[in-house]
Length: 546
Image 1: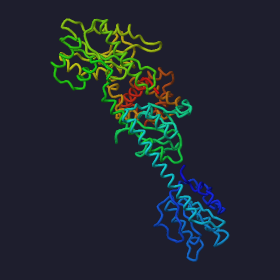
Image 2 (image 1 turned 135 degrees about the vertical axis):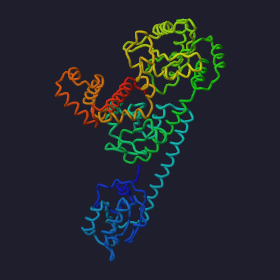
Image 3 (image 1 turned 90 degrees about the horizontal axis):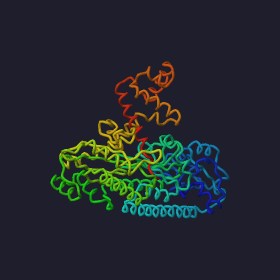
Image 4 (image 1 turned 180 degrees about the vertical axis):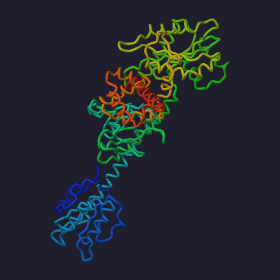
């Protein structure tokens, strides 16, 4: 534990001096870094801060003493307290000295029995050095833990749990919109930790350096490369001395960033050869059309007049984020489902796991092959093989633009995946699939859903509303959503929400005041519409597994 003046007064060697606190009793818990003995009046040049100063009292009651100046120097230097041995001078200190110490907020303690200062300094310095050694040992252990996790390419949940174990405190990883990505409650009730999390988290700011900030004194640390954070780590409790906690969060943030970078570039060894080809094509590693067609033919897909990119998105399974084996099995199961659907629908093509919960497909279309009929058969086969669970929907199919070249069609796969992701938040299509003309700006939002700039934009536009308690937040968001949906038609809006126009105007003025915008301004209307779309889209995403 950090050494404080209060804990120093409890040491046997100090207790033998019968200490009495005369001033600054509410500041005895400042962390002490050293002990300094002095009998001179001028100490400003020899103090570095956080020291406890020992003296026999000459600077306070000696013939040349200027106690006000002496105490002012201690205060300015950040001293943790002044301990005075009175045995050889007087029975007590003058009241004006005590009053000055109180005014300067310098804890003042007198020892009413003689003690050997060297015994005090030896005891305190031994504890300080021991604490420093423990700090070095803890730093080494922290380094070893997170180095091993980085080498193992540990996932976010494993890293967050390791951080919580090191400091024995709960740790939360959240994104820029305060959505919890991973949680290690460390024996705390998870329900109470996450109660009103969005609102409470917004009250706790993040600075450039990890540390305790805000009224709640939560310890926070940004996660991401400098200037482009994508999340932050939070200890949702106040910590007296967060030195160790800040160190752990900083190393955990580095491990999370390494894991994120590696995961983006790592290919699973469990996927089929089809996935390897799909990734080679979509990521530009295979740039020769003839080579690509030859490899596709070797995997069973004939040469075609047109190639059509298709993305199939499955509902995320409710398993823990740290269960890598289950994640690989789900991906393999999704790939098998799509491959079986291709065979049952008599559709030529090859598939590969392309994104978490999603499979990319390149469909080969002959000169006389009807595109719509082919897609309808494929969607129907997927519905039969992977029907949605009660209360959920089955696979969502997104369709990109066809191309006569395999490489061009594959280059459109990312856009196709975005179409499928955006379609997850839309009503089920009668056709069984979605094109870009169906999702439009939702597709752009889906494409940029993890872009820090887009999240920061939505946060800046809607932040004042999202900081409210749930009930007024939902009420005002619903009002803004209805306003945008009716294109600002206030007559229709008043009828829609069932209130008078006068009452509606009052609510809209409140909304404008909170957001500091003019709702009738076209730029404000467009900006808020986009921010709402981002907020609503991310609200439909499945809760990250923990």
